[in-house]
Length: 550
Image 1 (cartoon, rainbow, N blue to C red):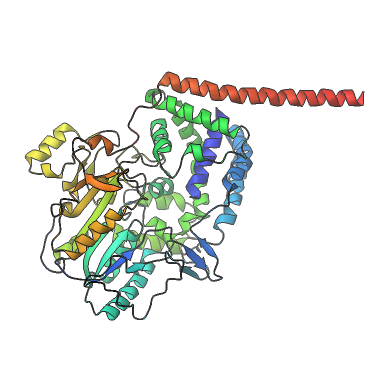
Image 2 (cartoon, helix red, strand yellow):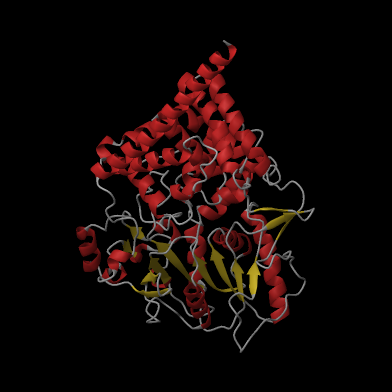
């Protein structure tokens, strides 16, 4: 049991480090403005030597080798529980991280070390021109004519300054007076920093596509040191996340790796059926509190915690705790970085609603799209809440009230909201109340759609929002407020009571408790057989050697 959980913890940790009603006439009306599309994070970046260094990636087989090498030190740390053993494990883990992160770490002030250049989707260096070309077609600017690429490690204010220069170049080239802005995922933090630092005088409309400006689950939980474990949530995530699955892990470097993973999967499945006896989660919590929690700050300071942009995706509820946790005892060394990330927190994160409300009062239409239906990363106290697998619906939508992933809003709540005149904002699957959004009439929701998927319909909706006057969730029959992603037809369809059960994944019943225990016993038996055969081969070798020397 301890060995299986040790493997899982190393896999988990390596995964973490390798791997947030106004209406007015005016600018929000029918204005043909060029659109600046601020892409999401994880774009390609090269260094001054032309070597691609971002996104961060490990060579094939690297994770398996790291796990195999770290397990013995982890086992010693767990068994001995001494500071020396814990330090040895942390040193070993960081030694495996160093080759991956050494070329992308920022300095103690959160500034890049050397020259870095973002690349376009066509792998060409993205340089701000003096005058951007006039790319208008058929009287309407294409949505993706002016994509904005950036080094996604940097302080959003730094990228916002470059965005301001890009907007100025576009306006000079087109003769337009305003631009539309799209903020996708992390790009929303750059848009928010731009609005805070440069205002909205040159902005026509804004659309947030899967925004991370209000927080991102992974940064919230890891940076604040407030991880929480549940076999039910872990099992749901591993079985339904398209980007991470136990079945796809390379276990070739781990002795009996395939059997261990099979046993782990069965154990989690069985534990998820008996939450009151969730022994794996209790053990994980104990191991995390006794070992992992104390080492994560150093691990983060050798990786993502030196990226100011990551701090922009720590939500307001966890920011102060995260700063205290990550920089404990090192406040003087990282004073410059702390000052930088605190500036964004105070001037943007805490004032986000105020900034956007000011835009809308001045006639700048603001809209957005929120995805949902995938289990959240199972490390956070709210991982059972409705999400797109990476960010909570309540955060992405700027304030929607949402249910748990496998539940619905309380009937009393729904009835009360309906009596108050807000019934139209309750989703047909009874999971979302859009009326509590900052901009409820221009926030769309799509069920059964994971965070990192971007079907063409999103761009179509965004373009319609920009090119027509006073667009709301009631404007287009094809794009009602609540929709469902139909995978087979690759299209959005209206969410109805009839198809409501399809809006989330991972709620169907899996193997029963007895079946899970049977699978666990089978995997354990296979491991035991391999162990017996190994011991037998060792004994036979000793006997043969003894006969040969007799």
